Length: 179
Image (tube, rainbow, N blue to C red; front, side, top):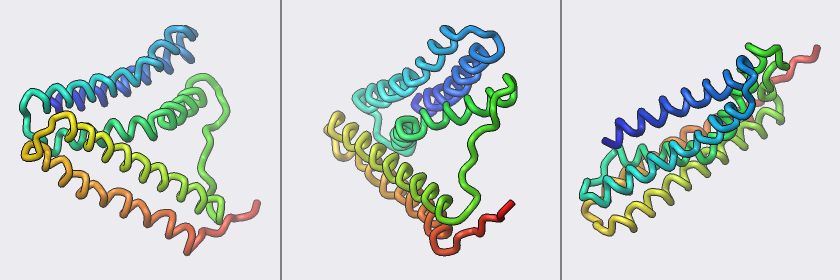
C-alpha cells in the first residue's frame, strides 16, 4: 500500500505542478494556478497519514516506510525550490519569460553554492530521521520498527556521497572563463 501511495504522490506532485503552471502561463487562470500549487503539500500529508495508519495497523516497518520518510523530508527541504525551478523553466519556455537562473559556473561562488546544497541534503536527512523517530514513537513496538533505524543508517550514504561535490569544488575549483 505504501509504495502505491508513494508513487501516487510523486505522480500527483508532477501533475499538480504541470497543471498549476499551465493554468498560470497558458490558460491565464491565476487563481486556479495558485490553488493547484498550494495543494501540492497535501500530497505529503496523505503520505504521512498513510504511513502512520499502516504502521499503527500492525505492519512491520521496512524499506517502503523509510522511503516515505525520505520523500517527505525531500519535499519539506527541496519542494519549494523544485516548484520555483519548474516555474522559471515553464515561464521561459511557454510564456517568453527570462532565462532561468543557473548556478555559478566555477570558482568560490560555485563552491559556496555546492556547500549550500549539501547543507540542504543534510537537513533533509535530519528531517527524515526525525520522521522515522516519530514513527517509532507512535508505533511503540521496537521489533516492528527496528528496520526503520537500519534504513536511516543506510540512507546516511546520501549526504556522505553528496559531500564529494562541495569538497571537489572547494579543493579543485573550476576556473571562470572571462568574456
